[in-house]
Length: 183
Ligand SMILES: Nc1nc2c(ncn2[C@@H]2O[C@H](COP(=O)(O)OP(=O)(O)OP(=O)(O)O)[C@@H](O)[C@H]2O)c(=O)[nH]1
Ligand SMILES: [Mg+2]
Image (cartoon, rainbow, N blue to C red; front, side):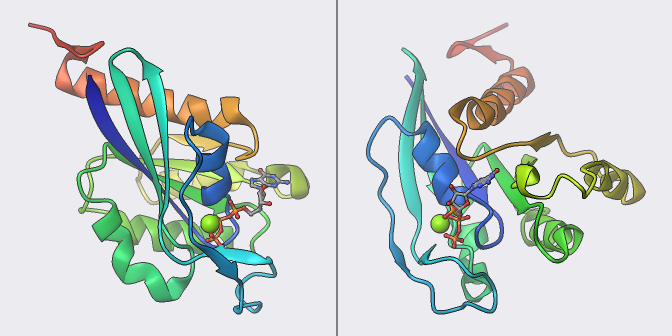
């Protein structure tokens, strides 16, 4: 049995807790409290600790799903949570005031500290008038080549696709298939 770790990070309200809840086979451990930072985001609850869930993909692959707390004051802990992770998924809220600033900020927080990053743009359905091409263009301009997806964190199949891409990419890098080392 291979046990892997995948981390969901990103700003408040991006959908980290939701993504883990959508995927997890076990009831999610979370530490949600009333959000007192209404300036940063007008949501009712926010995560102050880490979220934890698990998904068993097949008989030999189990993944621990970890969510970082979104509030900026917890940024010191993001790379600590990401230690040993296969990948960090940065979720970006498409409706935010400056989603490209958020993206830059989170890439900088993790760059050089982890092996693999994936970007998921959430809440696209809530701002269809803003083009999603801005992310690809921004990555190209900055000569960054991270996998980029639009995801609705409420839709299990969207989040599952991200996880499958991460596992496939890892297995390709490691030359592993279904837990067996290929020679
Ligand atoms: N419309 C829409 N709602 C979404 C989408 N993704 C997530 N949500 C909702 O957005 C809300 C906020 O999601 P959370 O999972 O609490 O966000 P979080 O990233 O954990 O936020 P913090 O813990 O405060 O950092 C929830 O009600 C989600 O169901 C999306 O793509 N579209
Ligand atoms: Mg949360």
